[in-house]
Image (cartoon, rainbow, N blue to C red):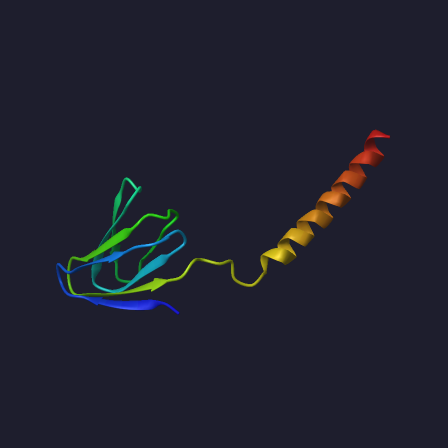
Length: 104
């Protein structure tokens, strides 16, 4: 369940903890984001999102009255990782079997 933050102009919030995989979506306004360990700063406008690929703290500032959602870690929708791993192992076995036949 995403957390919702309503920020007034020039208000800031700090998100601590492991931010790797968090998605910050701007629903209204303009947000300024910076993250520990990330050399850049970002502007996120209404309808845009920022996806973190690092664990560092994130500071979000509102350049105007804003609303943002902070969602949990990103997951690949639809296919559980175990299914993918089994399919890859099966494919590798088939490739290895086919390769043995070519070199025999």
